[in-house]
Length: 610
Ligand code: X8Z
Ligand code: ZN
Image (cartoon, rainbow, N blue to C red; front, side, top):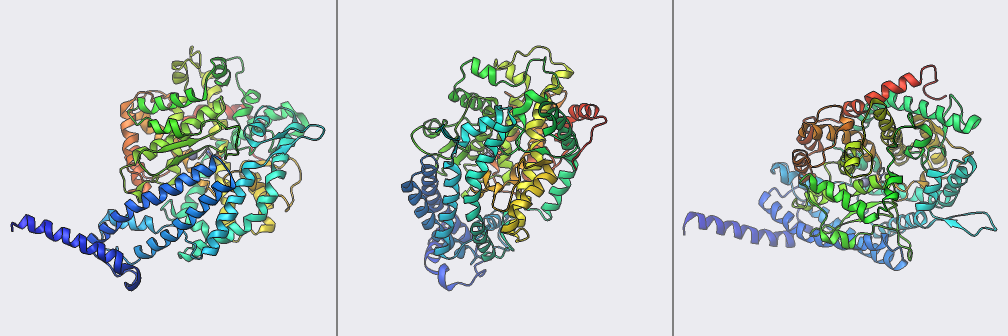
């Protein structure tokens, strides 16, 4: 036989033997870390990949069915499949540990490393309890209503009713009613369950050798001392935040008089948002140049009879204009883009990778306004990432880190909000753009992006210490407000006690979604934007840059997205920006003109809060 044929035969034989070996022997008899045959590892991973796709797809569908129709039936199906997948996953991890990956090639080694990340509950009873608790917390959150006092029988849901009051009402007491009502409705019942959730997550984390769940959450960022790095980054943007805060507080004082102090924290219900996380809804109160054409496009969208579907098509068009992938036909058929009237759903916007074929979907209770115009781009950014890393093995089908996933759509949206783009779309008049227009525009952007930073920072500061046992259940709520005041400079408008559980009023707490990803995203999206603008050869300040239709920018972004998690995020960052670190200089240079302007406006004011 010719040598090459012989080689092929030997290879095929080794694969056949390997498969037997995988199925028959690995599980019980082989010691952990004893298999160092890389061919065998590859075959095992390939087989796993195919089976994992099927299993994950089943769970993704059950999960989708539940979140878009929260019946008991759908929750039982979801939790049954989740239990099955969990058992299967435990077996897979057991086998993965049999390999000694030390001398494997980079890619295979990394696949094992990612496969073995995370915590693991090893007792079916615990898994069942965990599923029951998380489903219950989510269902309390999604189904809660706040009812008006009798004789009115009106009961309001969070989306859109209570969120609209928080955004549009300028009546101190009505705002307080919605703010407190929501917290009374969801806080205490979720707070009852939360300590058990913490306990189970920690058991899972410790089973895999982590100190507690905070370690598991930080593992995603693959960086020593990541917390210390975050602290430094926060210090760097703090001066900008404090100036924005002082300016906004002054304007709120003009509006609400002695109900807002000139030197203290701002009452948390006056900032246009249920969680005071982004403040753009009070743009009308704080606008520097109210006589200029407003950059708030909500009235224009409504005047032009915009539809929800149109908003999604516009976002889709932006991605394809860059030469990136448009949403497949199944997306348009299967997504849930408006709130259904006939059933309970989880309204909080989310993007779903069904893990098979091109099946990606968005679930959103979309309203026709500027905020949701942004969120549509945000969610579609997740779907674009899913589609771009589609050809990677399953373990690499993830963001370079969680912050990268959050930053894709937001990076696009930084172009979408420019007057250049919005006037092209007929959503703004687009006359001459002066320095004052810039300030007016940048202030609105700051209410979205800068106001968010301390919020994005404190949520997991709170949760990490909860997981570490440093913050115990009696102190959950007081610690929450301590951090809210320390970082955001806001305070509860009415007394809070240990019986309240205000963290539970924010979706990501009952849903167990880590939050530091958004803090990371809100910094790196400016780095991405700056890099893509450079690829487009944009000249002038980066807050005016619009990458629409730039294939150069699209190529750069696409190359990074296609990497998925196949390399550490520092490599992906380098691919797009040439840097290997999270860096605040891009966001600072974006807001530079505003920062100078704010400093002038705040002359003689107290900066910070007592
Ligand atoms: O949760 C989201 C997205 C889904 S990943 C709608 N965001 C955070 C939030 O709403 O709290 C986007 C910005 C921050
Ligand atoms: Zn997101």
